[in-house]
Length: 403
Image (cartoon, rainbow, N blue to C red; front, side):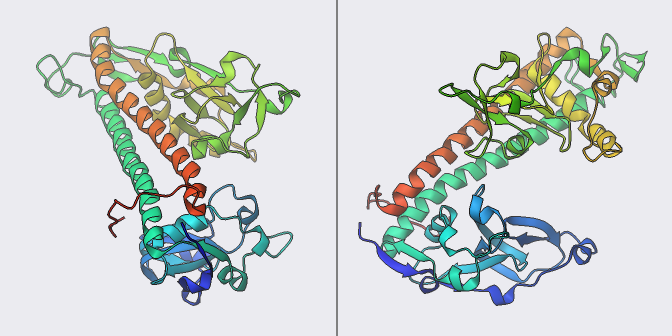
């Protein structure tokens, strides 16, 4: 496959002159309607827009330009606003939109940066970035193929979001409102189901009250800086709040010895609860890792994963409120708060029915998250090979413009 060298300005139109920064105070007084983009993606929402269409945004400044912990390129479409920390471009008739996005997505721009403290990719250097590009037809095929992978991830994420919403809705319906189906398929409480007095008020007859700390084990992680791998020792990436938030470990993640105790090793499908600073409850599918301090691995011998996962999430808003009230720089909860958080355990008959519903939801969610991880790894593996011509796609595939 034949490649030609271009300057970026020969392949795009730059729209930086249309950018308008807004202060935090200005944005706080606006209706949250349209995305407001900064250097690394959406940072807020505002009540108006200055762009309407499909554009590529590239970070103009920030440490990520040098460290590249995340991509420097963002795809923006529809109506949105952009501040003055991102370059705004659109492909011209010599280039394909998706090809350019993925080229910039994977590009090392260190040679074009200025500023030793705060890296900056100024407009002059940005527009003179060298792009090695094949023919427009080849660009379209490469861009189309990579976009199909990302669209599959996007579709999976939509299903994952719907599954989580379904689980939360059913949980509230069955464990808060007590309107689970009775023997006749009717809502239990509103159909006259027997209720008894408990410390939490009226609950279905035969159900029990216990605490979150009693239904599950909350294993705290280790201060992994004390468990660095020794020379020639196998290692594991460390799962911190950053990794939990993004859903995966990365080359910048710390490493720990593989010989840490099993109770603080994390595997796909584990429930992880960060109890300090940023409070999150997530199903982890980022691969084997070592659990850092300030995170719990939640497990149970007696109860199903969905049960302790959904009950922990049920209290997350309360835990966040507790953490915010802490008179410290890093809000957190204590184990005593787990003791105080009461849960309701159904009779075995209903537990078995709930198992049949929630297990399917949780399993499907975990499987989709695993598939997304595999698709992202496939994209990241193929991306440099496709862009360099090391791998060439066949010519028998039609390319459409709707991706």
